[in-house]
Image (cartoon, rainbow, N blue to C red; front, top):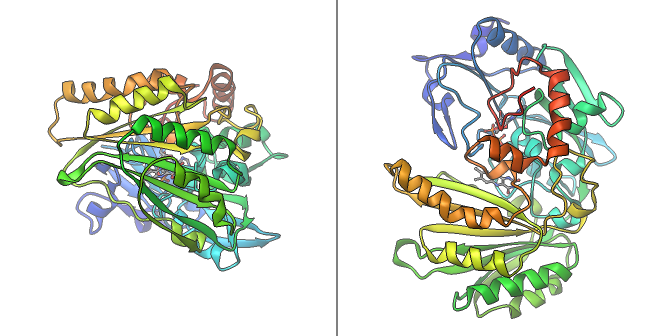
Length: 426
Ligand SMILES: Cc1cc2nc3c(=O)[nH]c(=O)nc-3n(C[C@H](O)[C@H](O)[C@H](O)COP(=O)(O)OP(=O)(O)OC[C@H]3O[C@@H](n4cnc5c(N)ncnc54)[C@H](O)[C@@H]3O)c2cc1C
């Protein structure tokens, strides 16, 4: 093997594809597409020897565009996409697989892993952020199903991390957002999930505050089988604003959804029993707009949070969604993984859509409108942030978690080779 076999450079066929991710295009000097772990090691040595700044990419769906880089080297893991059944409902999944492909393969065995909501999001990036999926209240975060990982370290060593092998690295990989090494594959404990009850309930938006209060009250007492996301839509294209609730029952009892029908005026419903793999959807970057994204993990969907969400939504041009947490997610000790915000009742995400030529002032205004909600939260989720300031780093990892992550970083990546991310400097 020479690196030439796996390199795509400016002028090569396929360069335009190779330099495009969900967040847009960049101009990397080289995109390296390893097919094996050894080729990942060779790619890393090449980038380090040439002193090329490095980006690591799995599914390329990071909203900050960190899986891409101008003038540097991208290690694109999309060819490491094997899904291998290991017995006892365990599975080894290459970091470059998409969650859609993994779900389809697991579905053949009546199995599933709670991951995200989107087919083409990568296993490598989502898992290291945490992974908030449709069965989060029943099975926790995606990282709560991780048994082990194969990692290429900054020094170019290949190690296995698990509860009993390099336990510090294993801790940091689960929520550390790509700071400590290149994960080439994860081993997961999958769950037996033959089918789920999934779908949408659409409500009129006569009383947004009442709807949110009702949703939060129902979800607080709901069985763990039920996870749901309330999406407040603006009136796109002149249509009326609406609220769409996405609900997933990790089981077969649709009666669990009953109380959700009483929280507001229902305009329509589309719920049915489906294979878990069919629940994941494709998503494309919205054309012709500049998204400005923020999120916060709130400990309670209470009066101040609801007021702030209502105000942000009323300003228009913005989708706000609230994702229920609790249940199995909350039962994991905050110190067990590098995702520490286990006390959160919900994740609130805002995406404002500006014109592509929006001025920095307009972007700042969109963020300011969001800040009111952000200030009410306990912290942020790494997966839905399009900025990476020191303040963001402090919100994603509370002080004690950040100090521990820094220690692991110093041990495994003292030169900060993996810095194109929400960076924890060594
Ligand atoms: C349409 C859409 C839907 C989403 N839905 C959900 C959802 O339902 N739930 C949820 O939790 N999140 C969701 N996310 C957020 C998602 O988890 C993050 O954007 C995640 O980082 C994407 O992973 P990726 O592998 O596709 O990204 P990439 O762009 O490839 O990588 C993202 C980051 O992770 C690092 N990284 C990626 N792979 C590796 C690796 N193997 N080793 C080391 N570092 C690595 C990269 O360097 C980069 O910093 C969604 C994002 C989008 C765009």
